[in-house]
Length: 169
Image (cartoon, rainbow, N blue to C red; front, side, top):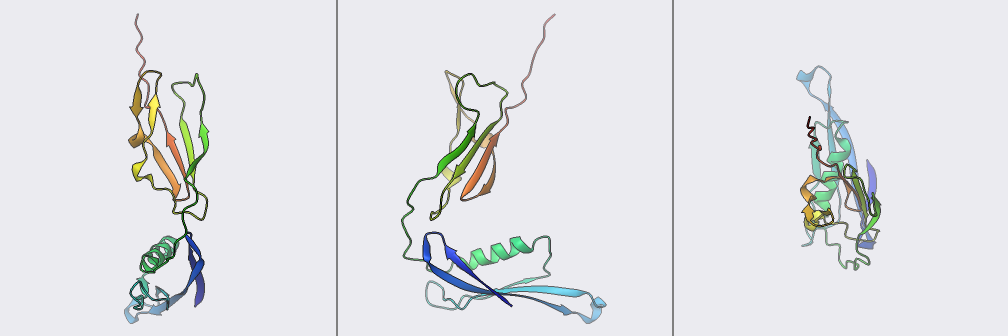
């Protein structure tokens, strides 16, 4: 058994202890193959003061172990009263962009890195809108962006659609 602590980024004065156990068992009909079970729990109460049920993940795979732990802990943390939350001190900001300025080639890829420094609530991309201006018209290219990262740092990338060139004899 191992212990780890989780702290909400908007209340760094409160930490909640979690226990994690990885056990195995062998079924008689499995010819000695180990079956792994991951169990995550906490003694911290939920919003109403009731115990938070432990999460059990059966047939754990090493390929998905980190994701399964993150998902289980996130579900349990959603049940915890993290108040009083601190005010998010600053809005997210653009840390890097390329290209910039005038005279940018029409075939240029666009990169934007958004950041939100802790303590913060993170970046909410649900209302983001990205427009491309060709000098006279704004084009909404938001759905064409690929987005990678986490709520505290996202990299947005846009690759222009293939240009069609016609030649005349």
